[in-house]
Length: 516
Image (cartoon, rainbow, N blue to C red; front, side):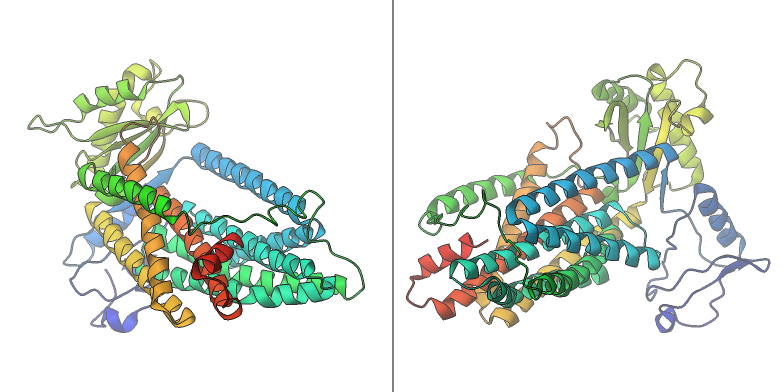
């Protein structure tokens, strides 16, 4: 039985509640919040067997309420290892490209930036390991955004240092003033990210929390390594009388005398932006999106075959199999997943039946529908437990309608709260509502264009463009980088408003944009 007595869940937030039967503790989850409507859920890393056992324990106890599995994800070892290998490979390649670019562009100073970034990564992974945090795809997106902020931070410092060197200052004085003048932009950009991460963590759920947690850790560590660690390393060298180049011969004067009249050409941008926005909004309202099961509820299966298969032919065959008793076809979609011998199959068949029997029924029908593309002698049990040596299901995911509703509700609330937080922070920091409105408008503009692209092309592209956890991770990364660059430009505009009063407003804005 669930040993809670008459204690209110509201008064015991953060404390564990044990689920026991016959003096054995089966699980002891922490109370995350009050239960105002009599409904709650237990979340964790359970296998199918463990989840079923917990349901049986709750059903056998003295609770007046029933229990059922509302969300389950199972990834086979082969796919899990492949995902890890692919993630490590892509991250390593991107990181090496960044290292090569920074060293090529900033010379020896770039080496110090790379050292700080590597230490930054070490801190991030160390904190996550110490806290026993699970690294998810949205979490990786948070780390990627943190690395992008680290690169931006070093770019700001070195560009300000170059300005001082071109003004005729010594290398030591140039670095001192470079760090000093870059400080405001760095702090504003990082505090905006930290505020956003905190809001997303408290108001978000599931994948949004994972993104927010790694972004929060990454932003704090990037602030520390960029402002303190890089400064200590650089000035330790300079105080010894050694030089520290902030450019290489090919990049010394690159873009130095470049000037573009952005404000003078703003009308063309307005027209292009308006056209894209109207098309995007029109598509969103007319075509909508292809939502993943994270938002609609349902089941996903990643199936591997021993040969290349045609996704459209497989989908047509499965539609006939997944039909209800009244003859209506359930929604079924098959898309190529990675290689041409792998498909991601989604269905809302028996979406409201979250029982283990429904899972078994769907697996049986899936097996029957895919038989023409499977080895002749394959059994159902072999199909349900594929590995690198034979075909079958290599991962599965089930999301109940109630969980999908929670993700939608909390996701929307988190984004709205984050936008409100950004608006208030910029209003307080820059003391002009125009800055706040501009930042939020820029974010909304970027979000609408991205959403419009997914709405327009999800039905014609040969690859998957559904709105799911992967999409959440990607769009939050893009918007996070967008607001970071916006704040950097705003900081330079604020500086020029004090120092370049002789400039026209359009000229001042152009200069501020070009420093990015």
